[in-house]
Amino acid sequence: MVDTSTSDAVELAAREAGLIIVGPDDLTFSRRKAGEGFIFLRADGKPVKDKRLIKRFQSLAIPPAYEDVRLAPNARAHLQATGRDAAGRVQYRYHPKWDRVRESMKVERLDALLRSLPAIRRRVSQDLSRRTLDRQKALAAGVALLDATHMRIGCDRYAKANKSFGVSTLMKHHVEVGRNQVALRFRGKGGKDISCCVESPRLARALARLMELPGRRLLKYRRQGKAVGVIRAEDINDYLSEIAGRPVTAKDLRALGACAAAAEKMVKIDPAESESQQRRQIASVMKDVSERLANTPAIVRKSYVHAVVVDGFVSGDLQEAYDSARARSGVRRVEKALKVLVDQHKASLLYSS
Image (cartoon, rainbow, N blue to C red; front, side, top):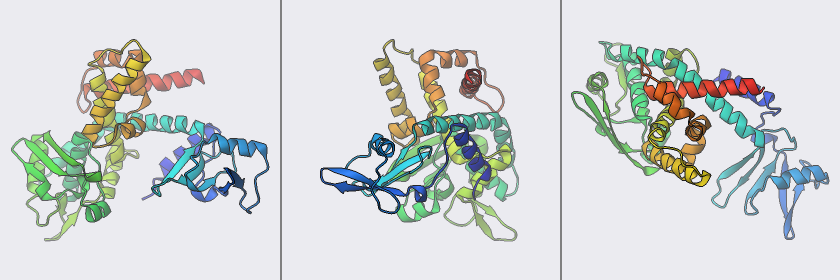
């Protein structure tokens, strides 16, 4: 399902930054080996003569080993180039402004999720307590697992091809349900072994009942009669957006979990005086969070923990926000602190503009 509202927001953010969104097919220029160096070719195969174009392409610093290099003729394109590395993977080069646009979009999504948390958790709690083993109960169980563990949502294709699992593809044998807790043990993306425990009597009761349904999958529900339906990743994302009242995905919950985990570790340490020591402190936090998310520290820093958290740690704003924050129904203390940081960040952007 294509989220048109999100696509429109990306287009708008790009336009405000003076960029245009392009796809790989729009990269009509190419690079070809010539002697000890390279030449750049237009779509018609003729060499590029424009010195400004050549200078821009060279400034992208595309490694010499990359093959099948494609380049954007438009200097305002958000995607400037692609190429294949030695392993055959497609690598991307973006416009310098695109990182700022992407970070701004991430902050907006974090802000929207933080505002929706009480409604999401209230509805999940209600649906977990439904008496019938219906679709709403199974969907709520999936979101509750995502919210508590920050795991990947999973994909049927990966589960079948790689035997790697996420919340939507968990099997019954991956789960042990006790009276007040749920223990999970399974193989995740990249073959990483994942083990975690969730303390939640309501979730434990709901999963114990769902596991009574026939079949190997964990997240199932009773259709009319004796038929059993299976919950898939897109079902959970649709349910999340419905109960939030705005577009929200499992990845948004995972990003929030990463931000919260990083913030909770950062408020326990004082920022070092030197920048090099601060970088080591931040790297240590990212390593800890990456172990929780079963990902790499680099990906956690780039894709999950927002810059407002790191900047807040260095400036002391995070500690101040956390010290003054108080948990309330549906929102944890650290999440309240994150909302303060996001509000401060948005206010600073408004003031600077």
